[in-house]
Length: 269
Image 1 (cartoon, rainbow, N blue to C red):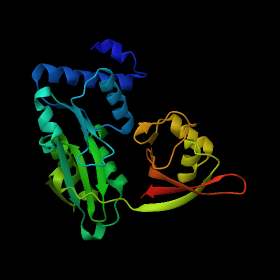
Image 2 (cartoon, rainbow, N blue to C red; image 1 turned 120 degrees about the horizontal axis):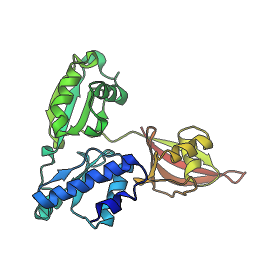
Image 3 (cartoon, helix red, strand yellow; image 1 turned 90 degrees about the vertical axis):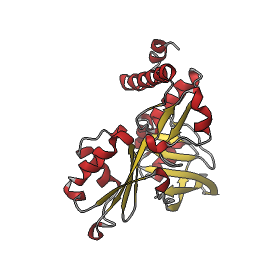
């Protein structure tokens, strides 16, 4: 593994640092024969690191965010001696990840959104990469964090006025209550199955702004980064627009007189 050669392929300093940390962790695993893991990654970062792992033919890793459909995940790098244990799911990921249940007082239930919890976490000085998905509900939220950040997050949030009456409890990953998202069916009219056309209609913005969102590397299809506005999607594809949500491509239900397509889209709410 030529570290410098791998790093020269990175397009910016941020990606170079991300990849460098991964390569360091692989060296630790080889030398110490122990488990290492990354900070939480968004889909773009995960794709970058998995490409590196593929190129260097490193297969002893697993991605997890604490539950099956997590958007933010860590990569757990492990030695050969633990391969069977991890692949059979006998490894206790509670030693790496923590889960915090936040129960709001009755007068605040139903009033807090994802933004309120994330804003609180940022306010107490916790780095975003130490925090995974935040699962909100009417009663409160479940916050996934790296284990070493668990106590700090609880103590910090408890000191904020907005959470002063909330109850905080550490829970096991297996105890997480992951609610299935509500699905809203939309029929959109598009000239083609190009990703820029679909994104602009679903998030209700102009085609030019949709193109800019793609250039900003905020659009993923089936968890893979999209870099070209001309990419065509197909039935069953899952599209994620960072900061806007996710939606699944359905069937073409009709054609308009002008030759446009009427497409069914399932939007997660």
